[in-house]
Length: 350
Ligand code: 13P
Ligand code: SF4
Image (cartoon, rainbow, N blue to C red; front, side, top):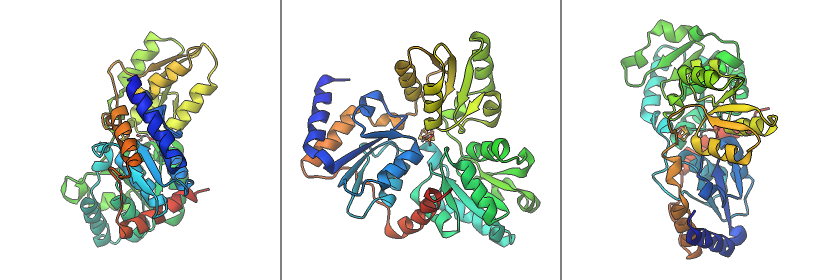
């Protein structure tokens, strides 16, 4: 990275001292990760944000929904900064509150809403988390989805899972013994979600039709191709990948899980990794004794995660040094109150 920008970021961070805490998601660029006080998956970063009441500013190098969650979990005196406001998440954008409320009204008309526990993936707006908190549900991440679903099925007979159909289906079918027939797909762009009353009454998992476009690019063909090309390769993927891809892989887990698996792997072993490219590249560089490669031939960055680059980070830090708070992320108090209920429920999972 540009030495001038590195020097400016270093100087601005030093000037701010303990007043600032920089969080970096594993999908961030190396040039940004070098300035993170802590790196993690979205679960770890939510906990880290909640555990830093003394930091006046939390600079979140990640995407918008993560910064919103940090704002909800920090004190009202703390300010959360997202270095580029255009760093959103296309999956989170696939569930809009109005659509979710329409679906819930439909469940109410059918008389089944009392049986349903809403569960939302962390990758959702604060509005959606607020909806889930108001209706007795829980937030989950890719590292605790099974525990969240176990809890939800203790509270009710059905789960309404938002917004990632793949994490919902993969967890239900591969970790909880449900069948594919127990799951139905609710399409917000079709009348009544494209489902009949009978399908909704029979389903155990009602999956929102959302997905991650980055992980959606991995295919069974990518798995077959790498196994042919690299005999003995271990295929490890993120649960946002499609069901058939996860089935074809050897291991599945969150970004934090993937990092630990690669760290623990014996020297000389070969790994094809199905997750965002910044993380895979970094792991390959950090472990030259292992053969760590990207699962697909095509380049696969998360374009919105990549929007946070060193120039944006330098700008955000220098603004803070100058006494201004740039790109502050705030969640309105009523939404925050209920979203916090769903987030606290997640943090309290056994
Ligand atoms: P985790 O960090 O929870 O594994 O999630 C991956 C992701 O897509 C974040 O946007
Ligand atoms: Fe959203 Fe996918 Fe990017 Fe994660 S990798 S931030 S789920 S678009």
